[in-house]
Image (cartoon, rainbow, N blue to C red; front, side, top):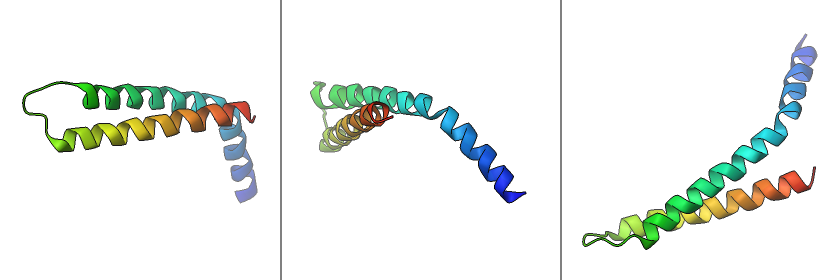
Length: 75
């Protein structure tokens, strides 16, 4: 019984893996642009925390895009 459930879950995950990688790339692009906006934006009261948050979003976005693209290519 447990093996049957495991096989069904594996089959479902294998069938949607490309969509998950594409979602990872899309989320990475979104994070990249949010981080870029937070870093570049000009305001009188720009706090250092906002630049740090922007840098973190930018880094995670770049890593997410690269990871998703490499996973799609390696399939």
